[in-house]
Every structure is written in C-alpha cells, then in structure tokens.
Length: 359
Image (cartoon, rainbow, N blue to C red; front, side, top):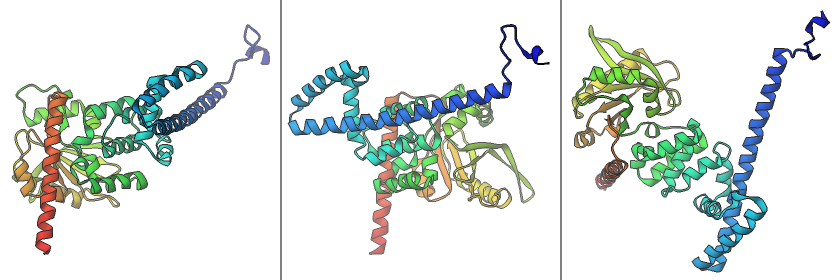
C-alpha cells in the first residue's frame, strides 16, 4: 500500500487538508504582517511630518521651509529610497496638519490604510474629512470606493452636511465612539441613478424595473447596510389593496425602509400616503427589537417650500431627488452648496422662532 502512494519522483502526495491549512496560515500571517507594517509606516509618516513642521516653524520663513524640505529629501532618498521624496515629505506634513492628534491617527490606522488617508488629506472641511473617515471605517470601503464617494460629493448629499456644525459633530461623535449610525448619515439628496440608462420618457414602472435590474448598483448608491425585501409590497387596508414600490431593511438602523418612486415634483399628498404605509408596516411587519419604519420618497424634482411647510425633517419621512443623468461636478457642487445654505438658513430661522416664542 505504501509503495502505491509514492510518486514517480520518489515523493509522497500531500494530503489535501494539510496543504489547505498551511496555505491559510501563510495567507493569514501575510495579511496580519501587512496590516502591522502599514500601521507602523503610517505612524512613522505622521511623526516625520510633525517633526518637519516643528522645524519649519522654528525658521519662521516660508523660504526656509522650502529649502529644508528639499535638502532633507535628497539625503533621505539616498539613504532610504523614494518613499521620502520631496512630494511625499510634503504629504507627511499635510498629514500632521490635518490630523494633529496622534491618538486619532492611531485609531484611524486600525481600519484605514495610508492610501485611504492620502485621499482624505486634501479635504478642506474637518467635518467632511471626519465623515468620510468614519463611514469608510463602518462600511469598510476600499480606496477606490472612498475616492468615488468623495468625487460624487456624498458628504454634501447627506442630511448631516445641512445641520449646524455642533449637531453634526455630535452625530459623528456617536458614530465614532458608539458605532451608532443615524438616518441623517444614511439618507442623501439627490441620489445619482445614472446607471439605470433610462431614456427621456419613462414610467414609474420603468423606473422600478430598471432599479431591480440594476439592484446591485442601486444598493451601492443607497449605501451600506441596505437589504432588499420586496417589490410592490401588498398591503390590505379597509379591504382595499395598496402597493408599496420597494421595501428594504437597514441592518445598522434596524428598520424597514419603504421607498416610493415618483416621476414628477414632490406633492404634499405623498406625505399622507407614505405615513399610511409606514403605520401599516409598523403594525404588521416590524419584528421585535426593530425600530419604527422609515420612508423615502424619491422624486424627479423636489418642492422645497412644501417640504419645509410640512416639516418633514422632523418626521420619519425623507424626500430626495433622483438624477438619471450625472451632471458635471461643477453644476452638482453649485446645486448642493445652495441646498446646504438653504437648509441651514431654515434651521436657523426655526431656532430664532422657538427662542421668540419662549420670550
């Protein structure tokens, strides 16, 4: 029997489970070593950036800073290679400037690579930078996904960007310290659905069918945590059939999310219809331990005054536009900046009215 197991070259065949186990051990160790090396290098880069920054401040002159970086880079490249080029040293200085607290850096590198951090460094707004860092950690984005989210202006499309700075900071702190995600971090406006490839004229059914055909892309646009539940969810109310366009479940929010698709502008009547659906879902579909359902009304165009008068931001119903064609980044940026300013002005006005009533 033993002779039959010997190969022509005199070697023994390796048991399949043995080679599988050894490969797994090697790959796991390689991955762990890579993570450890990446974390160590990232802290090193931060400390180098901080030290150079301190040296430049001693000189008190911009010209001195430029010259010392060039000289330092030449010497380091000769000794340690191109990782310490002038360009990379400047990145390290920026890194230390935008993340001045070493403890925050140590916390970030548990989940984000140096390449992730390089994508975050150019962002000017600290809240914007923290939003992307935390969402990247929670949803485990690749570097490519992170860059795509930044390019699509995800932060500006979420409700949190429209809030006063202090409230936004609190929500991000809850996400960072308690892993608690809020609806304002989940829902966005507008949603970019250019992947549906819809023509100029289409019906609500065409829109729904296209979403289901491209469900994976739609889920990516919705964001992490969403799971598809049903299409045309049937609800019998007063012996009449009602149908909800799309039903999803969000794992981190622990809530059902009812989505209604509308072709035209938002109408006030949509609020009542969606409220009815949410009440039915709360009564008949919500499981023990789940929070109350949320509604998302996707319209081709928003009606900002109606939405403001209905005070939908205080309800469990969110209204958002959808774009079937991706506009230029400049146009999208102008549109989002205007929406953020308008939302903040409305919140400020409401706060003043509350103070006035108290007096």
